[in-house]
Length: 274
Ligand SMILES: Cc1cc2nc3c(=O)[nH]c(=O)nc-3n(C[C@H](O)[C@H](O)[C@H](O)COP(=O)(O)O)c2cc1C
Ligand code: SF4
Image (cartoon, rainbow, N blue to C red; front, side, top):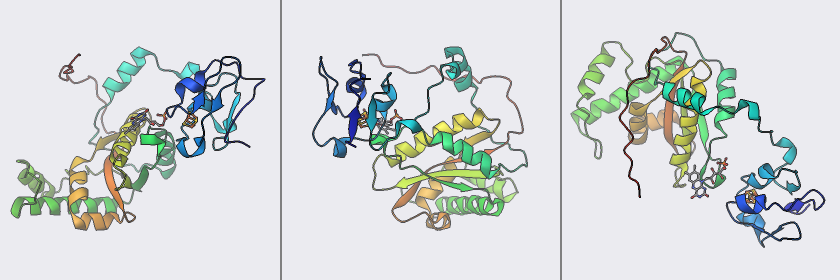
């Protein structure tokens, strides 16, 4: 088949595919179905918008089988009130039940999170899931080792946080202040040569955080861990990511021990209008 095929009997010439294509690869004609530009194959980012938007299903894309597209279920759209409650009700969860999160559950979460937007639809986000408690403990220990180096010897580009000393002493006294005894850690990583990989990884994790909070699980961004993962060779070695890849974000995840009753106050949005 051609790269794009439009069934002229089904096409109602509404121009929607022309309007939504981010790469402007369709040309509109008043009397006939749209045509495509030259070299479409190399310019198409396979975002699927043209297939997804067509109300009559007239458009077929060689790389994107329409039969694999799920239908948008109107009844599942959140109301604005539900959205507001959902987004405001998200909390960073730092106290977890001593209960593992099954591989099946995590796989299901990631199967949803993979729908997060990625720059030029690269879908290059990769996931490292760690559920081995000993391994998580080892990572937390390496982060503390890194902070000892920061405090005692200094690390260029890293300002010693005034609380590092307390963090280390709390850890030494037996509290995992780094990864919070979470039963699982989910790390996103990507190609370090791709300048937008970091954005994609962080967006995917932000989506995962929201999905997680809708499933009875809870999570928290692992910022201390990320600082060490970007700067401390022993932790990079422990993560053993493929060559040319870098960790760009990490979440601790588990079953929350507590339930929040109120939404904490946050500062007003600072907005510049032009
Ligand atoms: C970091 C980032 C940068 C993006 N930049 C652009 C952009 O400059 N112009 C644009 O039209 N779309 C941009 N997008 C949107 C992506 O092309 C889009 O997410 C992708 O094609 C998948 O489509 P979807 O978001 O509808 O799933 C960007 C997305 C991300 C995550
Ligand atoms: S898949 Fe996306 S980029 Fe490719 S032709 Fe369709 S709308 Fe355009």
